[in-house]
Length: 348
Ligand SMILES: *Cc1c(COP(=O)(O)O)cnc(C)c1O
Image (cartoon, rainbow, N blue to C red; front, side, top):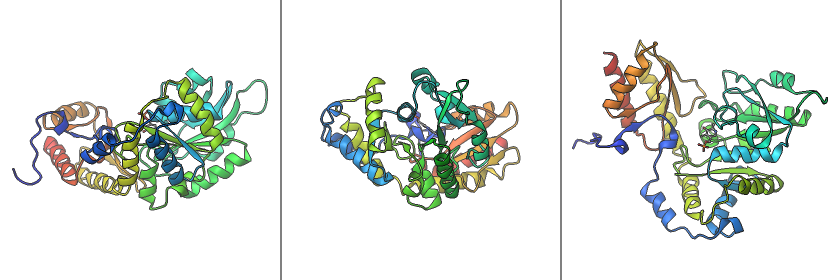
């Protein structure tokens, strides 16, 4: 077989651009998982989970961290720890916490969301946030927290904005939470230490199961007080796991080995955008602050035909008029060139 060619016999051989959650643990990561020393983490006795939590806290520059099964849960742990029944948090209209987590903060915490539209650069305009803060009056919910997302739609938020958001929340006595599912993509993109992002926040949720390549798991990083509360809520939510060191070992491996290489994913996304921009029938969105996502828009009715054509040819993408193509650990530069070639072929 020629170098770079692949025979695609089953779904594992498909080039899957739907999300960076589709990555599979490598042999080296599985080896680390198999060798993990374990104990009962609900008793605080899993040495590998403890090591992961300490590693994450030291990397993000927080006092403590907690390991949980998903980013949905670490975001919820933060909201439940910062806010009480009848409190409100301000959040992006299309933010993951508001839109894609089943309304968990409202369902389980009686926390009212106040969604606002994101700006084009993925920030929330602080004047608009200010206007949304409720007066201290019995008619209103108590505004307690501002939640940002970084990356937002793949965009790395400007560092100077984070400083302004921190000062703003201090002035207005709000807590500041970051849904940093892809915080390392942002740090790698901006070529800054991750702490220059994380230091502005009261809590940060980080996903290990996106571009970092772990099969399961997220971390909430914050002060000892917040993490102590989160630990209680994690048990309430059914997220107390036992010999979770098997999973934590994958997380440690991901943090130690898979951060720097995120730059390859960003390069691959930029390459894909450049290739697709040559196709007249497509509208391609890849902003300067973009990391590992390319947004591809096509005419009504075209996207479904394109999706099934690609599926037959070994490529998986989401459906819709505006499709998000995501690069990750399991997609090589060669795969990107093949994807671009297949899309060009479709339009020929
Ligand atoms: C994936 C993701 C999460 C968490 O998702 P889980 O699937 O619950 O781990 C949170 N926020 C953003 C922005 C995400 O992309």
